[in-house]
Length: 124
Image (tube, rainbow, N blue to C red; front, side, top):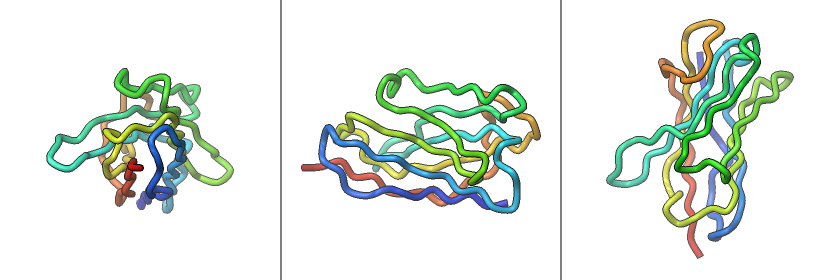
């Protein structure tokens, strides 16, 4: 089981970025996948998740980023996305994806497997 977040980088305030979570060794469609972030000196923050497709693939987005962040998946590519719009300097953090290890899991997810993160820096 491997998860790898990618797509991070430097973006200006107000800009957009889409992160990808690539799954290998398993079919991500069968599991809830969650996104988290951790900023320097701060606790890890849950951003939301997407349920396994067998549970209608519904999404949950945390109130702190609701309206700006969207979670989706492409089952044909075994990818889960985190679309981030209207980015702010306070969105600067390392972003991680994680899998709820229960087959057929739904949101809220209980993360059991974590991927390596990707750094997002929002700065002018």
